[in-house]
Image (cartoon, rainbow, N blue to C red):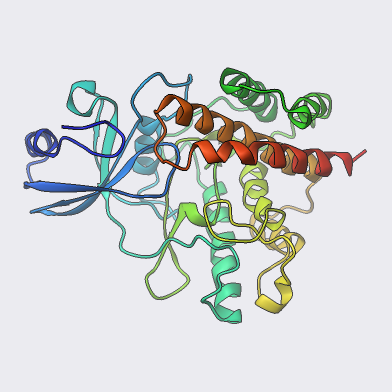
Length: 344
């Protein structure tokens, strides 16, 4: 059968998919991807082809978390835009099949890049790859939300006020120890909310190197993945989320950063250069309150990892690495505080 995290009831799943998709042919096998802390994701190999299945974890879930149905909706809406996404095949909202919501989508043959320094790339390849990331981000924020049917995908206006409230609540719901720097940054962010500048776009919510799928042989981004945090919001949230990697510790894993690395020697744009190119592509003169956007991104990541750590304690996390992520919460909140303190 299944424990809902590491394995699936493949016989039941095969029968269900064949009943819903005339072209789907079983039997099938399911192999869980080792990466991903939030929603368990599986490579499905069937007689009719290879696919990806993404589902909610079992057990009690925090409000609005693990929204695989929203992932399915937004990627379906982006099918004919300049934002590359896999084809969406089926959303199952019947919990009796696998114990929680899940969807089936196209398997994109290519690469996932984990180390931000791209150690196996040449200098020119690194430059090209990061420019492709920048181009993809600009394309995302240029999407006409009305034209693709996403005008009601989120509430416009006061994005950061709502996000700060949400992630503070999420953090409190999963908190099991007091972290002084988290208390400090929550208060600072509340006191330094920028005035709403009216910018509204589709935002990915977790735009970073390893949530993109790359072509097998060149720098092209072939898919933007992991949309569970997507909504209508402020585009600078995605920009700041990506730029966090400049200050995170170097190394592999899904929190790989570039701190202390000679970026110019590697051909990787600095934070300022990446922002400048993004502004050129999107027609923006400058970005005010950048330290707020960046420190908020560190705070939010800390809050997210706190939630994963709690699920790890309760046995509902998608990866055995979940509990270890708790050790990253305090350093991330310290980074948020350092960036914020530079503003005052």
